Image (cartoon, rainbow, N blue to C red; front, top):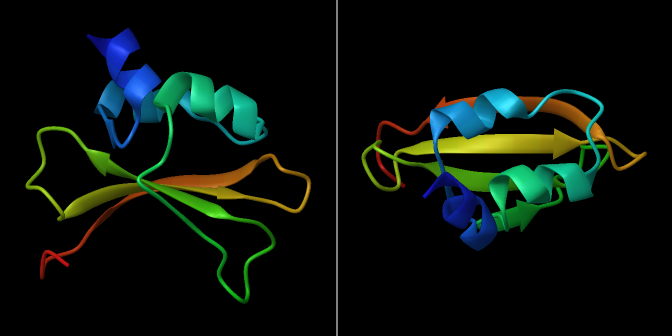
Length: 86
């Protein structure tokens, strides 16, 4: 199930989040997490942010963001909870 989930993307399990570390390439992240639910390029950011939804969390409330630097490598990754659900 985990391999299929990584292949389809959008949602991730916490064990998959733990596999993402600073310095990974976009390709490596995509192999672990699959395609993101959304990709953002914030004005002050050095690179894109990929957003995934967390499995077993209330839908639309918990996200996992992977921020990439200008070199295309993971700069930061963190789980965020949106108490308003949107």
